[in-house]
Structure formats: structure tokens, C-alpha cells
Length: 317
Image 1 (cartoon, rainbow, N blue to C red):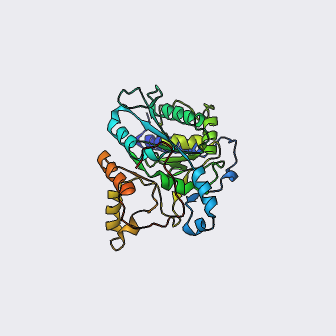
Image 2: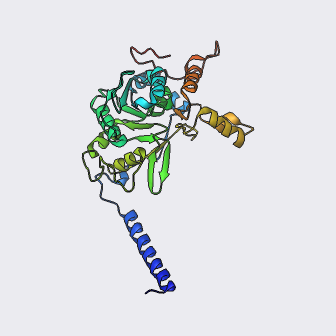
């Protein structure tokens, strides 16, 4: 029999060996089709007013017409009230809003993917969006619990080339993996989605069924698949470096601003060009809709340099 001290030493050796194996696995990186050098942008910033002034009026008008957004909105019957709210509010401003559901719903119209697994359903939805986008070159992936201001998203990508692999939003880090938070919304350029659909066919790099031992969230799994095609998570920011994709509601952000920046709450809170907010109830989203699109100080002119017109046939606010 082993002595107590011998058992301790044996445990120490086994523990060290296990850590060594984990370190080796963590450092192992399969070959990729795209080199890391292809990665040119780390923080994607919206154009400033000065940059917009450098563009001619006709050029800005043409750009504003070209920037169209396909909204991939993932819904389930169990969150019907959020689904109905997204349908009635911000999704009206998408050039092509498509709701993808886990099962058929008689209450609201959506594309039924007939798939229960979240990750498999997201894959199918993105593939369907890619195949049915037409001339649209920007894709916004969101849950109905997120409130989005699509015009600000269009402003963010106005001067960006969708033939480059942009994958952006609220960039976060998990170990060595950079990923974009699904809760705050994910933006993909046409090129990024094209590469993603390509890697969906490689079950070794991007398996449809997740492993039973270490299950990753959908947003992390998405980042893992994209990195094999040289597409990396970027943080969407305004011209001053403030994040545009918020993981909290406006109320929570203002409370944080009052606590952390009591002398300058608004500036310390969030960007005035914010794209998304999360953590709001359906009724709070309706209030946001009123504040963003309906409330106007009479006679005030914001002197915007460009205008994004409502999608054709839309009954948006």
C-alpha cells in the first residue's frame, strides 16, 4: 500500500501531467485556409462628421442607398411576446427582416427551420439568409430580446467594403478566443457570411453537433468557425471610441453613468450613435421606439449629413 505521503506525491504528479496535456491542447492550432495577416481591422469605427464632409452629396446619397441590411432574427414560440414586439418595432427598419423559428407558430409568421438545437438552427438560418439576400450585403443577427437602431448600424458600416470579411458587434474575450456577443447583436459582411457558409461544410472545423463534454455558446461557436476562414471579432465603436453594441438597457447604462460619472452622466453613459441595447422588457422597447423615432423637439434640425430612407413598402415609424 502507498503511504499517505506517497499518495500525495502521486496526486501531484498526475495533476501536473494533466495540466501539461491541457496546455498542449490549448496551444495546438489546426492549419487555416486564410492567413492571420489578412486581418486588417481590430476596432471598427463609424465615420466622423469630418469624414462625412469629405464625401460629396451625391456620393453620400449613393452610399446611403447601397447600404442595406438583412436582419436574421432568431425566435421561438416560448418568447412570443418579444417576437411580437420586435415585429412591431425595430425590425420594420430592416431592409429585409426575416424571423427564423424553432417550430411552426400559428400566431406570427416566420421561416420554420424545423430544428430544436440552437446551434444547428442558427447555422440553417444563416445559410438561408446568404442564399436569399439578393443584392443586400450586410447581415444583422439578433434575438428578439435585443432592441436595434438600424440607421445607426448603416452609419457604422457606411464607408466599409462588404467584400471584406467584417464580423463585428460587442467584442468579448473567453480565454484565447475573441467573439461577438449574440445578446448585443452580430453584424456580418457578405464576405464574412460567405466564408462562414463555406466552413459549415467542414465538419472537422465547424461541426453541426457540439461535443457533449465542453459545450460552447452559439456566439463562441460562431467565432470558432469564422476564425478558420480568417475572420475575427471586431468591436463596433463610434468616432470617439465608445462601444455601439450595448449588453445592457438604457436604464441600466444611465444608472451606471450616475454612479461612475456623476458630473457627466450622459457622456459617461453611452454613445449617441448606439446600435443596440439589451435587457429591456417588451413595454420598455415600445417606449424606446417612441423616444428614438417619434419624439421630436419642434423646429429643431439635427443637420445630419445623410438620410437613410425607410425600406420600400415598410410601415415603420
